[in-house]
Image (tube, rainbow, N blue to C red; front, side, top):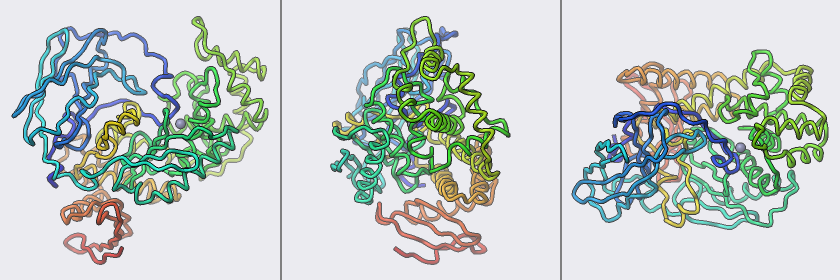
Length: 549
Ligand SMILES: [Zn+2]
């Protein structure tokens, strides 16, 4: 274990909630959840989870944020928590109100960048939390480590910016995004030009595009800015051009106006105009593949609670529905309808307001629209391998989310640690979008998922299935408390052994591709340059055979 792995990890290993992938201004569009039923009169400290940011251990120089996550049935009104650090020095971190957080509306109090550790000594500290007004008090220990123990590209990493034809591009120095900047600038301009053309919106005002060096959600999101995960070990396995296009559509769609835009259409439009969700895909034939196995989700369900439905199926259906409507009535008629759905009146729910517009523009009820869509899907011949592809896409992203919930909870889309990018840059903070949980378990699981993601993009289904089985069995074994969970599957064991061996030798491992008794491995050396290694399996383990740059 490396020095930087000794730091505090999340006190509790995560038992969470659902995910997100990027609609414009996500948390703000969502309906407020219904009032809570239960209430803990004397809450036990054990019922609260505390998470510190940046992830992956705290180091001198960090601007530390803290999430205090309340029990799911806790009454939030007028509740606060205060935090105080004790140790060689001490300081009050102030108080934070319990509020709803993220797309999943989790109940928590959040201290944003409340503890500036720049002038603090490394060592053990205690944080005391006090609930207001109940007076419940508890303390947690944490370690503040010496900044010299940070792996590259920290602690030198800084925000940097460059202008392209369409956009202001922000990235962190010393990362894969800086290494590949020229290519990324071109990619951003190409995707923005295409998005602007398909929505017929000019790009007069530059869009801010931010490259993150960690996975958050499914690798992309849009608010006022487009944010895209770009890193060598991207375990959400995405296609950067397609995700960029999707998020740029959200920004331009938002700029094009509209009154009430239901999430299913916001996302459907982005998927349709991008020609796929996570990869280029024929939307209607793939949606047709949902019918026979019974995976199709009723339109009413998608209208009611889009982000909590099965993510990949919801997005696929949404994109296919938009394609169907555009094919049937033309782009202009669809666009007129979409931009003119009235805001729900107080006495109406969102579905009624949507149905009103549907009646006005197409003389259809929701049920009639859905029947037309289903009739159309029934006529489409869907090759049987589409079903396998769709099922494995669902399995892959379900597994990514399962990993996030258990090992990288700040990345899980429903409660992801997504911040105001402008503020981060003004404060000069990179660690929140760069550092991640650093245990060997995280590394080995991410390496398996990154390879699985590449297999999904390349339609290498046999290898994909084996990797997903290995990851799921490993996580299940860890949940059962098994001491060496990677021992449950030969692939998991290989990935763990190779990752561990190379980490001990001082490499940051980014990708592993196993081929029987051979392994091709890409490591950062020096960071972020990639070096290719060839390994071979011997009787007593894996051996490094060849290094080539
Ligand atoms: Zn989206």
